[in-house]
Image (tube, rainbow, N blue to C red; front, top):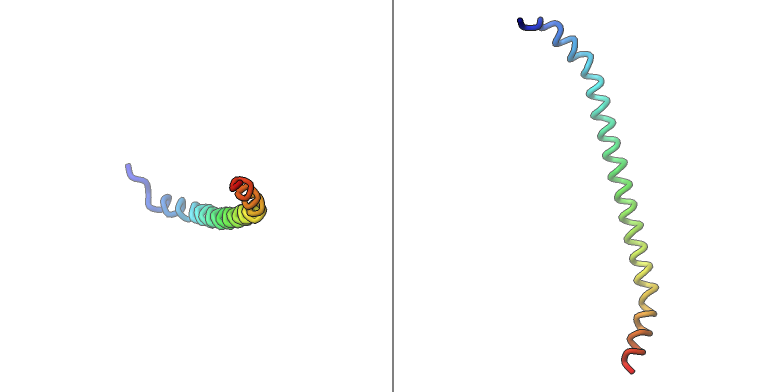
Length: 68
């Protein structure tokens, strides 16, 4: 036997706010993760740039010694 239409619409009405909240929370988590990954990427790029700046004098000294 088929369920009455009334029960289906009652269930949908009860689940709609829950589904909406879940979707909103998922989108907020996505945004937070996206921002965190972007910030981590920027920090990594800064560290690499600093390391390159610090290594330039070392590489120049090494190259000078290697030329002898």
